[in-house]
Length: 304
Image (cartoon, rainbow, N blue to C red; front, side):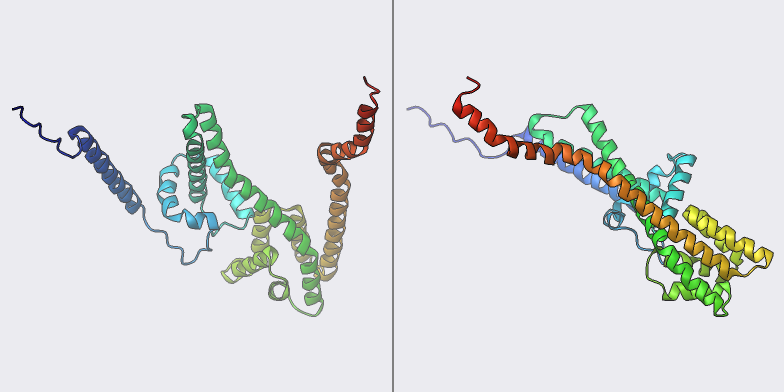
C-alpha cells in the first residue's frame, strides 16, 4: 500500500515572518527615534504669550522639533522680513519666526503626502508635481499671513478717525495725552487699534517715554497714517502747541483718505467685474437670446 502523504502544516513562510518582524522592528525604532527627538527639544514657556492661531495649535507638538531643526537654516534677511510681517499681523507674541517656518515645512509635507495618496493608484507622481505641491503647501501659510496683515491694516485705518475723535475730546476736556490714550483704549470698540493703544500704554507704564512708545507704534504698524499722526503729535509737543487742533485736523484728514480709498475701490469694481461678465454671464445671455433663432433656422432648413 502507498503511504498517505501528511497534510501541509499551516503557518507563515520563514521569509514572510522575517520580513514582518523587520518591519515591526523598524517601526519601533522609528517611533523611539522620533520620540527622542521631540523630547530633546526644550518646552516653551507660553505663560506671557498670546495663544497661537488654530493651525499652529494643532501642529504644536510637531512644530517644536521642526522649528528647532530649521532655525539654523533660515537666512538673516528672511528672518527679519518674517519678524516684520508677524509684527504687522499682530502675532509678535503668538508666533516666532521658527514656528511659522515650521508650519510652512509641515504644510509642504502635508501637500506632498496628499498628492502621493491621491495619485497612488496611477503610480508614483513625477518629481515636478511633488516640487509644485511642496511649494504650494509652503506658500499657503505665507499667503494667510499676508492677508492677515492687509485685513488688520484696513481695520486700523477704518477705526483711526473714531479714536482720534475720542482722544481729541478727552484732551479738550482737560486730560493729558496718556490719559486720553487710556480713555480711548478703554471706551473704544475692540479691535487691532485698541490692542495697539493698550500696548503703547503698557510701554509707558514699563518706563518708556511717551514719545518712544509712539515711535515704536509707528515702526510696528508701518502705516503712513499712523506715521503722520505720530510725527504731528511729537512736533506739536516739542513746539509746545495745543494738541486738540492737531488731532482734530488729523482726524479730518484720515476721514478724507478713507473716503478717497472707498471711492477708488468703487471705481475699480467695474474692471474687476469684467472677467466674470465675459466668462460667465455674457455666454449664458447669448445662449438664451440666440437659441430660439438657431432652432428656427435649423427647423426651416435655411442652412441646408
